[in-house]
Image: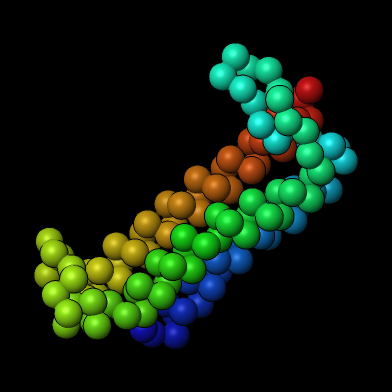
Length: 118
């Protein structure tokens, strides 16, 4: 992988933690952590639990980064089908990582806005 690809992957892995840390200042000390199917809140927790969730959500990007790093080896072993080039596989992994990061950032930011709205 090229240096710019490593930089993008590191940014994608750090972004969930940065978004969670940035949202901590605007959240109350206790936040709703789970809402049941009927819409009632059935679990409250500390706002710092968002950092643990952010670490869990950064993990798929870390795994995609490692798979992207080993794209040539995956091709050499015949483990990739439907994609004709290791470069295209790396692009696919990068796009998937970006989509996952945007979805996570949107969820965290809307969660914080919903808590503040009451």
